[in-house]
Amino acid sequence: MGSATRSDSSMRDRVQGVLDLIRPSVQADGGDIELVDVAADGTVQIRFHGACHGCPSSKMTLQYGIEANLREQIPEITRVIPVT
Image (cartoon, rainbow, N blue to C red; front, side, top):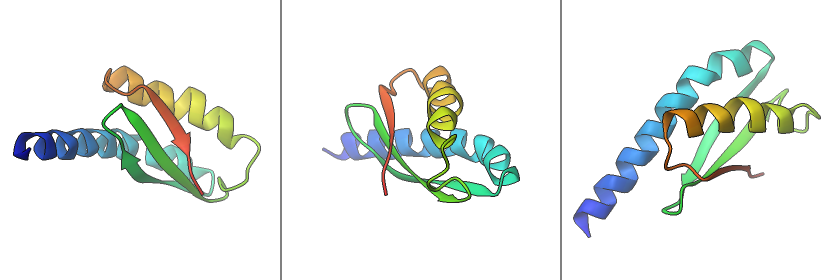
């Protein structure tokens, strides 16, 4: 059980690292992104803040920016979903 916890923590750290690289671009548009959770099945939950929250373009940002980057850098990621 201890190694699973380390593995989950490591995956979360890797996801956070990629989000930290993406964050300046999102902040330049007046928004921000927060990592909420990384599930064992590779689902990442994020929350949009600022100008991104409710923005019609946030779906495109999520799919073509955030999800594409995460899946490229971390193949174990299966999907990225926004939460409120």
